[in-house]
Image 1 (cartoon, helix red, strand yellow):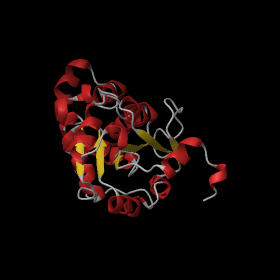
Image 2 (cartoon, rainbow, N blue to C red):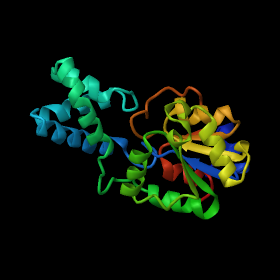
Image 3 (cartoon, rainbow, N blue to C red):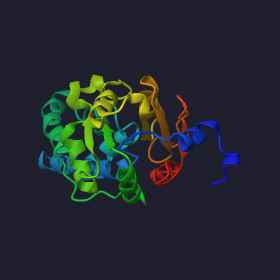
Image 4 (cartoon, rainbow, N blue to C red):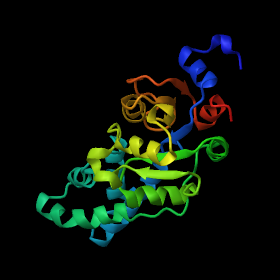
Length: 241
């Protein structure tokens, strides 16, 4: 590696490696879209049992997810777009939400090189997974990617206190640091979303590496990461593994 062309943040990570690593899940280790596609089809099947057009409903759900996968009320908005009257939607929503949250993919594709990169990181550092979302859904994703056993610890922020503690709230990262036995400032956070992963790192004085993968690959660097790389494999290489 030609260190003469590297910026200050990247040089700092090379010369002063962290004591532990925290890795995001969705769109960092695997393409979140692959899960959302399957979940929208599960909603379509549940809708078909209630007399709706399966393909049309699946597409309506998928469009809402593409508009922002972590926004609340996805099913509500999909039913409005489908043209369901509010009084009928009220009865359908619990059934369709249950279909979404209980969807269990058998397998989800990891990003190329992600498994080897995670194994290399784990061989050198304690590694935590820090992820937001419904715990049932997030654990299903981990199982389907084959990554459930790849971490020293897994912190799902919703288990700590619901949606209010999702990143960039610092509590999840604070819990990860405590479990890993290091100070937050001794961590590096690897993730795809500046407004969540880079922001939570900055909140506790940790460093961060942004990977440009997934839904937010082109989002502005606000706040800026310590370093930016194409993917997890490049992040692992930056950390000397």
